[in-house]
Image (cartoon, rainbow, N blue to C red; front, side):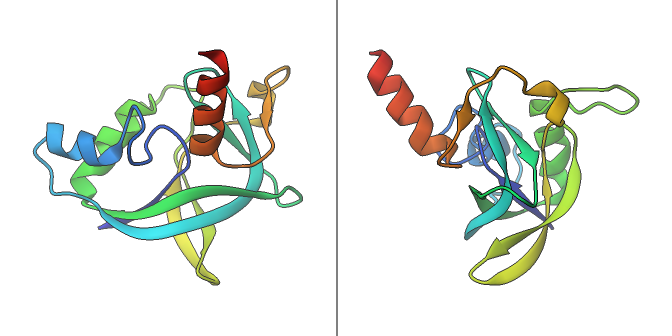
Length: 138
């Protein structure tokens, strides 16, 4: 099992919901461990957010899941992580804060160079931001 921190479209109810991805691939359901945070800056890429890790920034909110190892390559494919190819997202292990405890998790940040000119999500919460943005646009 692998612990994964998801902060954007992989969160429950979002377009790339990792629970749905597991079902679609016949993989056992992930286990939600709870909400967590990591220091960083969140940016709006339109259909999805990007997290730039930044120890000087405020918290970015996400969820920690324990996922079957078979689900990790599916998540890599959703995030377009392919061996030997560069991509917007990278797959890295980092420590997040969950209920006051440090937990090592896999997560998918972007490089600082990818975000110039993009709107910053000041709240650090993609789901709340997306809902508000989509309601305002309707």
